Image (cartoon, rainbow, N blue to C red):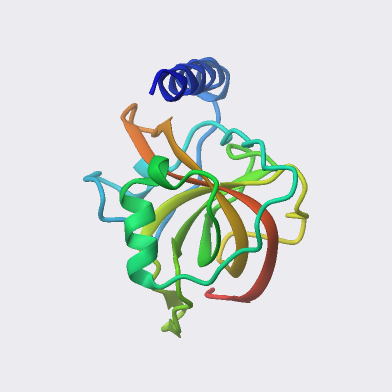
Length: 182
């Protein structure tokens, strides 16, 4: 518990410091976002104003296991209780720009693949994904992906309206683009 609190303090301090230097940039719109875990007046209000921290992945994570939508709901509800679990997730990139940096992005995620309908895939859980080793250079906003990840816990960041958002954070070990919803 003390270690978790210390990590949260370090994250909050990093967010506050980076937010001061990034307030002059205008974050992009996240139109189409269906995140329902918070109330915000506009979709742009959920965009992080700082890059997600890149969690340290285990030296050799266990093989990623497939999970159900219910399994993912449990992890998303309490990510700190599932730290270190290797799982497979599917999702859609919602924000991958100068504000998030090159090593991480924000996406809506689930434990199962969702079909694309009318140019949109209905992934609901706002999630921060980061990688120190997986190649993210070809990934862009709107892409659909399959990722093998290790649960890193939860992360809090400041929204463009000055509020705080807390989301599950996943460390990517392997990612594959499986389409686009644009």
